[in-house]
Length: 449
Image 1 (spheres, helix red, strand yellow):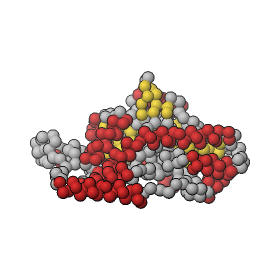
Image 2 (spheres, rainbow, N blue to C red):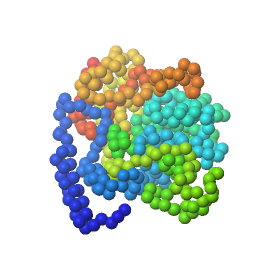
Image 3 (cartoon, rainbow, N blue to C red):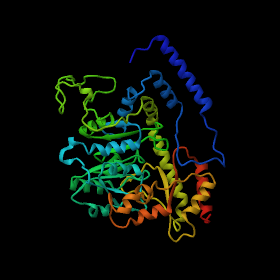
Image 4 (cartoon, one colour):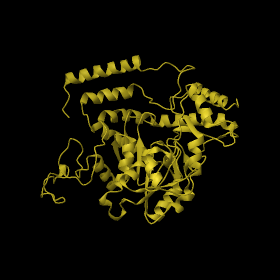
C-alpha cells in the first residue's frame, strides 16, 4: 500500500470529520414510540462503524486486506482461539467448515460420500446443506425442550460404522450439552463442527473453566448478517485451533489454491518456482497450483472494517441480550400453564439470540393466533427457522424415495416446535418500552392479561 501524502492525510481527516457529522445528522434514529415496528433483530452501530467503512474505502483495498487481518486477530483474541478465516457469509462458513473435513489431506479421517453426519432437523438449512450437497448422509435426531438443543440421549442410537462427524448449531444463543457431545465424539473419533452463528459470546463450563462456544469443536462458524450478535452486513468466519484445518479452509476459500500467501504477497514460501505438484511441470508457479476444488468466498476489507468496530461493542451487546431475555422470562413465567418457556442448558451462560415460546398442546389458542396478533401489532416474530427441515420442499424428492438421509426415532419435539413454537427478539435495539409492549400484546393475544 502506498504511503499517503500530507495533502492526502489532510483530506482524509476532513472526510472523516464530515462522515462523523453526517452520522449524527442522518443516522440517529428517533426514539421509539408506541405504534412503531418492534423488530426481532437488526444492526446496532454508531459513528465508529461508518468511520471505519469510509476510512477503509479510501484505501481502495477492495478484497481481503489489512482490516481483515486485524479483525481475524481481534476475533481470535476475544474467543481465545488460534485461527480465524473471514468469509462472505455464515452459510459460506458452514460450507467451508464441512468441506474442510472432506480434504484428501486428512487421509483416513476425511469424510467421504455416503459417510454419515449426525445433526438435527430443527434449525437453519445451511447447517445441513453442505452435508447433502457433498453426498454425505445427515442422520437426524430429535431435540429436547426447553433448551431446544440436540437430544444427547439419542447419539448412540444414531451411531453407525459410517459415522464421521457431528455437525450441529447451538440454538438461539443457548449452548448444546457440550460435555456430552465432546465425550461422544472423543470416544468414537468423530469430528465436531460447531455452528456458532446464533451464539457468539456464550460460555460453557468444562474441565474446570469457562470457555466460549465455538472453541470446543474441531472447527466452528459464525455469521455476521445484520440480526446477529455483530454484523458486517454480509460476512462470516470459520475458526479452529488446528493449523492443518486452517490451511485447508483458506485453500477452499481462496479458489482451492495450494499457496498460502496472503492477498497482495508473493513467494512467502521462498520456493515459488522450485516445487513438484501432481503431474505439473517441475517448478510450476505455486500461486496457481490447486490442491482442492475450491471457491472464492472471501469478504471485503470494507466489511472487515465494520466488523472491527462491532467487535469492540460485542461484550456490551451480549450483556444487553441477556438482560432483555431475562426481563421477558421474569414477566412471562406466571403463564407457564400455557407456554413452555426457554431454559439455559446446564453449565452454560447463554448469549441469547431470541426468546423462544412454545404453545402447550392443551392451551385454548394456537401458535397462529398468537403470532398473528403480535404481527398485527407490529411486533416481528420468527419460527425456529426451518422447524423440521425434512418437511420442506427441498426434501420432497429424498422424502418420497426415503434416500439421502435417515431419522432416528419420530422427531416428536422437532415436529412440536414446527407446529407450536415461535420467538421474539432480545437484541440490543430493544428497550423496556418495547419489551413491555411485547409482554402486553402477547398476554392479550393469549387472553390471560
